[in-house]
Amino acid sequence: MKYENIRKIVLDAILEAVEDGLIHGTSGNIALRDDNEDVVAITPSGISYKGMTADQIAIVDMNGKWLDGPFKPSSEVPMHTAAMRARSDVRATVHTHGMFATIAAMSDELLPTTPPQCEFYPVGIVPFCMPGTNDVADKVVECLGETGRTVLIKNHGMFSVGKNMKAAMAAAVYTEEMAQIAYYAKVAGVYQPMPKEAIDKMLALIAADQAV
Ligand SMILES: [Zn+2]
Image (cartoon, rainbow, N blue to C red):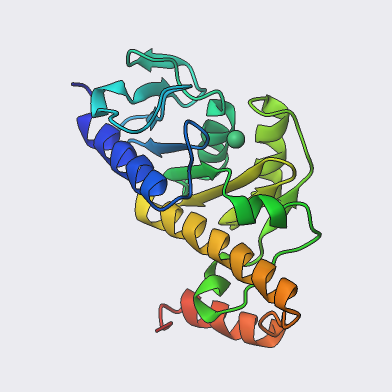
């Protein structure tokens, strides 16, 4: 099997996301760029992730052209490859339709409520665009900017990036957590996001690799 290493990492990540409830059915997709060649492993379109094998993960080039695998790549391939083309630091991308991130995408902002969530601040919000289009890909890239780790897409879900799969998955998990805590705190009438000053201090510690 060609590109076995990146295919296995994508498979493990999608199975973990399904098990954690971040991804249901065939919604959501995950991609990883090869370190040595400009190819990308991405989950296939419309196939149940449960029972999937590594050889069923699709391989595309950096423009999303299907190169290998029995099933066509995710319809969101433009979004994943656009983020990788725009940012050389982005090697892995995770797109989910998690419930709380999707709810938060309908609001005006999502703020951290705990220190570990600060790493993913600010969370941009992309206006609704038709899924699977270059339009949504362009808007996601623009909203991520040069350093963004995660954005919400209105009436759709979330898109997270990282220097490797672990980092991209952490962005997806913590953004969903951020959205879930904010939702329940607002319902309970006790919502208090982290103060901006504290978020900035946490970001400085994270940048200096001194966050505990
Ligand atoms: Zn989607």
